[in-house]
Image (cartoon, rainbow, N blue to C red):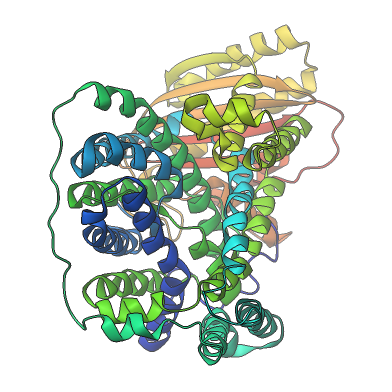
Length: 591
């Protein structure tokens, strides 16, 4: 993680915002997302031959995005990431949703969305089983590919000129939007910088209105308050041939979409704190659970699935505000827009080129967020190669430069999406490079130390490790075991309540180049102890200062290892140690 990653941050995730500022930023984020929230379901219902359900589908989509955005910010139990994670309609579901509408109508679509939401909830609950696959390299690669898949659409929107409008109307209004936004973000200070994207879009809309491309008639014709005619279509429980033909594609896309959401949830955490912290995978699980819950709502309401929207991450990068109050405000704005057609029309009347320009500015920063995630990884050169191959393969497939005829037909054209193809390739390559591991299962207790020492001795003998390395592995394992076994009454400051007793320990070890990687996987009941990785970073900041007696063992652990990574999931904690097998060249204890 970059040391200065949070220097620009004005409000951390837990900070309280003035209500006018929260509402203003919520409106701003909603404006950045609303075009996708409304445009995507309208495309799906028109292409699927269900125009009679169009207005209801758009209404339900905006409502579902509002409910999901509030769930994310609220963090109720194990639902909600607790970060600014606005929702929008899921673009990767477009093709399968159109197919469902074409083959079985809105009822078939509702059934498929509900089932895919169930897969997302299962994915969230079992995320700890996938920690070796969904690595920072995979997450960063997917985030880097998101702008790649979106930019062609945005560039196409920039070139749209309404009939009868001057040819300079769209380029000029889009240029003003970009110039004003970038100028404010780069040059302005204080609170004015927070409003950069909104001011830029407003400026572009004013220029568009002066040139006659703002759709004022749409605003005039819309009602002030209302609900479109229609109702949820209900579930199609016929389970015919079309159902079984569509089900695998929906479930597969749901898994791919969840992988993308993991990347966005991780990126949101990276930007939410002034001081870098280890990723809390419990928050990632809660974010995925909120997404699945929101999609259950979307399915029963009769619209397409929603997903974590990338602009909510890049908006934090632009504005420097990560307070979750913005997430609440964004959700409320969506809900209000669903029931206020006049206000929704006011936003939809903004020229397409202006909206595209505003989103383009924020999306350019998303690539850097993904790159930061990749560079923050402690992965070896093979991991970086995985990123490079997957990224360029994704670009090649996105722009039909790699066997377009084959991939255009294979799996219904699913792999013609660069983000999907690149993400899956990154996962496949990661699976192929998972090394063979030695494994030991025991109880998490000091009495297990003898068995762990024997395990290390056998591992060292197979790999020809020097005695000095064996001693470091032995000492590091003992300190890790003691740290994980620390009684709940000795919690570190700002740890959350509810530490539970630990049961079983699974210890694995493998060799990677000049390092031994040991992984301690512990089953936890109600576990919520402070992250060891964060604690080690705090010790590094203290330098030679006196530290509490209880942290002496952690300082020793930092001395013995080249890195420590602590991943916390619901009911599972995983501590990964890397111990240098070459001649000692310093200790960093970095995460």
